[in-house]
Image 1 (spheres, one colour):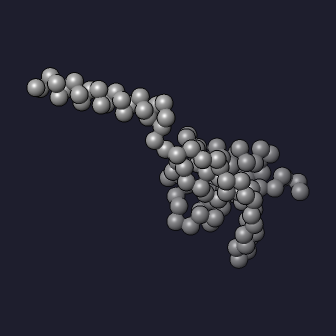
Image 2 (cartoon, helix red, strand yellow; image 1 turned 180 degrees about the horizontal axis):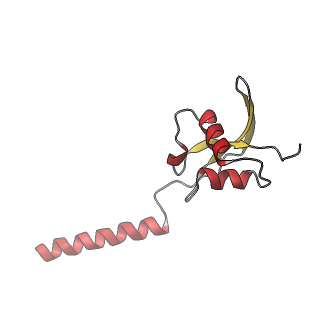
Image 3 (spheres, one colour; image 1 turned 45 degrees about the horizontal axis):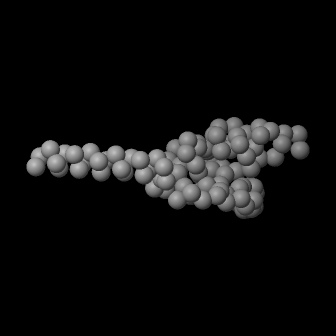
Length: 108
């Protein structure tokens, strides 16, 4: 009886792993593409709503959205926390949509 239960448990684990790898358990959705401006007391923020994917970090997403540069890590963190109150940039979660700052090209 012990061998039977062990065999069933192993088969169940293999099935779950195969299902997760083949079909997945997280819903696949397309990122939201919306550019919006919001006003702060002293600053107007341009931002784009973006759904975090696997391996995404604040820096990787901001660099993807702003290919020309013109920002620093401290400004990214400050602007992200302003646009997403109560969200720590180190705790971006897969599948959730956040507002990421857009920066103008230097010299404009």
